Length: 445
Image 1 (cartoon, rainbow, N blue to C red):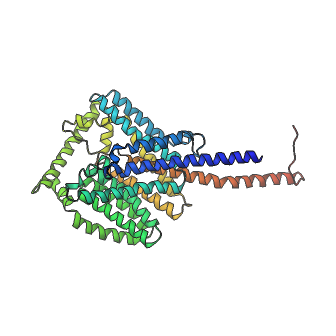
Image 2: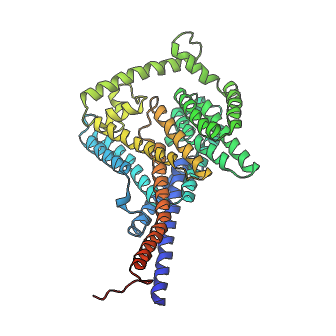
Image 3: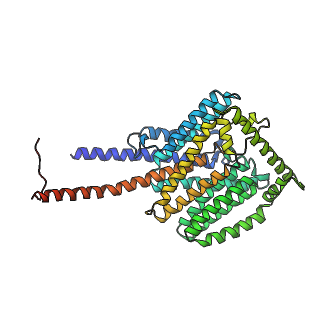
C-alpha cells in the first residue's frame, strides 16, 4: 500500500513538473511573439526564438497528453471552427488562382496560431496562469511602445521601427488598443500606490505611441474599446475617477501628440491639402475605397475558396491589403472561411456572456472579464478599418475566454461534487432508517 501511494505521488509530481515546463515554454512563446526581442536586442535576430519556444511547449504537451486536466475531447466549439477554417485556407492555397506557393507558405505561418491556441487552452488551467499569460502580452506591448518611441520618435508615424507584426503603424496601433484594456485591468487590480502608478505610466506610454502612429483606424478602435472599458470599470465598477482621468490625459495627449492624427482625419475631405502628411492621408483614403471595391469583385469571382492567404496584394494591382478584415477573409479564404471566422469570434462573446451572468465571481475575475470584453469589442470594431485577419492577438483573446470559462466550470463542478456525496449519504441513511436499520446491509453475490 505504501509503495502504491509513493508511486502515485511520484507520478503526480512528474506530471506536474512536465506541465509546468510546458507552461514555461508557452509563456516564452508569448513573450517572443508579443515582445519581438530579436528586433531590439542585438544578436537575437539569428536565433529562431518563436519556433524553439513553441516547439518545446508543444513537445511538453504531447508527452503529457492523457495526464492533463483537460483532454482533446474537452476542446470547445471555437477550437473546431478555427481548425476547419485553417483547413479551408490550406485548400484555398493549393487551388489559388493567383499564387499557390506564396499562399501555402503564408497559410503554414498562420496555422501556428492553432498550436498556440491549443496550448493556451490545455495549459492555462487556473486564474493565476491566465493572469500570467495576459501579463506577458500586456507588458510586452508596453516594452514595444517604449522602444518604438525612443528609437523612432523622429520617424513619421513610427513606421518600421519594430519589425514583424509592429512594422506597420496601423498594426502597432491595433496591438496597443487590444492590450490597453488589460493594462487598465492590472491597474485596477494592483495593490499599492507604486504598482498602480507603474501601470498608469505604462498606459500613458501605450497611448502616446498610438497617437504618434496617427492611425485613424486605431483611434476609432480606441474610442470604442475605451468606452466599453469605462463602462465596465468606471460606471459598473463605481470608479468614476477613471472617467475623469481618461478625459484629462486623453485631452493632453490629443493636443501634444495628436496633430498628425488630426491632419489625417481632416484630409479625408480632400480639401486644403497643405502638407505631405495630408496628401498621403487623402491618397490612402481613396486607395481604401478602391481596394474595398476590388475585394468585392474578388469575392464575386471566387466565392467558394477565395484567392489564397495574403494574395490580395497581388490581386489588387496596387500591392496593398484591403483595409477591412472581414473582406480580407472572404476574398482570400472564401465565404465559408468568413462564416467560420465570425462563428469563432462569436463563441468568444458567448463565453463572456456566460461569465458575466455568474454571481459568484470575485472582484479581480470580474475585472479581467470586463477587460476581455473590451478588447474583443475593440477588435470587432477595429476589424472594419484594418487588415488584421492574421494577427494573433484577437485569437489569443478568444483563447483566454475559453480557458477562463473552462477553469470556472471545473471549479463549479468540484464544489458541487461534495454536495452530491452528502446528499447521497443522507438519502441512504433515510432508506436504512425506514427499514429499521442504522447501518447499510451488505449483500453477498
